Length: 157
Image (cartoon, rainbow, N blue to C red; front, side, top):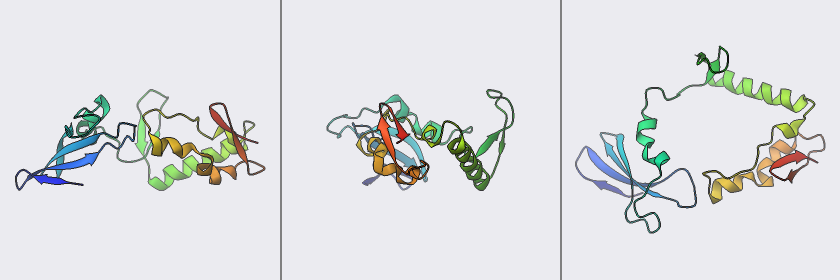
């Protein structure tokens, strides 16, 4: 990571977009007093030449937005009502584990848990995370300990 000091309080930090899409965009982040204030594409990047997509151009706004979620929340009203309560990380992880176990024991079986395989904004690193080796712990969910890929999804064999 390269840092360019523009003043004692302001510096430009060279980084990379965290989206991991094939462009691997280089970013210039302006930091003032320890806080990012601007994100821009790096004009020296050989492929994107300073371009950043609309999602990444708004990183600073989303990072410091007053409505950004910082803690786990549990819905307390009907879906879409916008009513939530804050819960602890332990509660959140416990509820997720409980729900996954319910699905695993359901008539749909553990294959209902395995994610649909797609790439979206992911590039080589994240896109490859759907390889069978990534599911070794999840294979234990299948009664025979094995799963296989069918078109667009993973299923127990």
